[in-house]
Structure formats: C-alpha cells, structure tokens
Length: 314
Image (cartoon, rainbow, N blue to C red; front, side):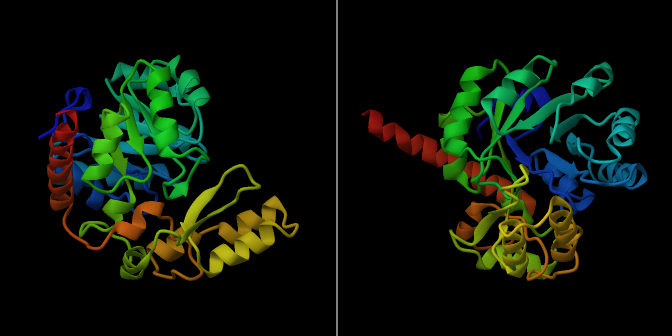
C-alpha cells in the first residue's frame, strides 16, 4: 500500500483523514477510522468542553491508535476546548475558521501535531509562520463551510507555496481522486462525505439516504453574502435561506434561520428543513459500508490507478 511522510509524521497506516464534521465526527466514527489505519477526527464544532472531553475518552476506549480533533476557532468554547486538548494530550488537531497561532506553543509542548485547514494560498502562507506541521487545502467542492477555489486549482498552488506536507480535501471519494491528489503534490487526502456513508457514522438514516440519492448538481452554496458560505443539499431550507439572503434579510435573520439546522438533519433526520452538509462528490457514492472497507478499497484502487498510468510513459 501507498505510504507517505504524513504516515510517518502521524504514525498512521494509510494517508487518509476523516473530515472533522460537527455532529457526525463523533467517537464512533473517529475511532473506527483510526482503528482501520486512517486518521479519525472528532468534530468539536460548538461542543462544550465536558462533552468534548467525553468524546475523547470514548475514542481512547475504542482504539489505541492515533486520532485527531477538529477545532472550530469561532466556537464560543474554543479556549476551554483547547485546554482539554492539552490535558488529554490529543495527538493531532486540525483547525478551521481562524488562526491557531496563540495555542500552538502549548500544543507543541505536549507534542500535538497542528494542521490547519486553508482555502487560499494567502492564508496558507500566513499560518506557516506559526510553526504548523502540515496544511489541509480544502476546495469549494467540500460539504459544509467552504471557500471559492476548486481543489484542483488550490492544491498545487498551496503545495508550491509552503514547505510542509499538504493534505488535499474536497471532491475526493475514491481511488481516482486520491491518485489525482498525489499527482498534484498532496501527501494525504481528507474525506468527509464518503465517511458519512459508513456503517459507523451516526448520521440519521434519512441523512444517509439523501446522500445516496444526490446527483452531481444536488448541492448549492448558501451564505454567499455573509462571507461564510456553506455547501448543502438543495432542499426547502436552502430555498428559504437563499430567498431571505438575496431579498434583504439581515445577518441576524439569516443566523436565526440557520441555527440548529445541521442537528435537525444529521441527528433528527429532517432532510427538508435541516442542513444536509455534503460535498459535490456525493453523486458518485452508491453504498454504505464499514470504514475499514472504505479505506482499503480506496487505497487499493489508488495504487491500481497509479500503476496503470505508467502505460502512458511507454
């Protein structure tokens, strides 16, 4: 199987990260991905510190392999959550929606690897000054909070701009995508939507079925005017949000409309009025299977694709 320097850096078997999805990146999913040889990631989202600590403990009970936590730097609990990370000696953190620089010294002191998510070259260069270990270059194809540059355009530019390993995210769900990411200079890939369709993911059956039914044009971006766009399935919520957004709705009205809608979809199963955050890659996903099978199948396919490409050099 393919090995990269990310595997050595994080002591994982396969260069595959599970996206740190709020509500869905739970201990059940993170531990399954880590146990299968990838890097499972708890999605802290807006978790209070006690809930977050409990998720970490559950992962540690389920696997002795490395795992990570995704920290949303805009969370009202971010300071307390970072204290939990240090106290629990979490091996890896990925971060989003901000600069983790103020927390890096304490994290480095305990050996935690710090890997921010970026959506532009400018942010990648800025974060590089803080002593980070790697970067995740996430394209607009991803589900949830996104930037506006595609993975294929963003990834090689970030790779050229930094001297740390880069993980590709956005629009990757099979071995072909992994091979393409490696060709563009990535050292690993991160996948969210593919792991939603795993047996271990706690997403409501309605949520998983919505992903299975999705086509290539089933997602839309909302929140474009707010500066914090989000990719979700085009449903009743999306229509209401876009109508409000482009007809004079205030920021407060938009925030109120979106509040709690991810949980409504992911946990309660309301995929009409809830926020079904998935990536554009959903249209090619056809099954639900264990995390181990997902990882092994994808890496086997990636290796076959790379080997097959050699025929073009003959």
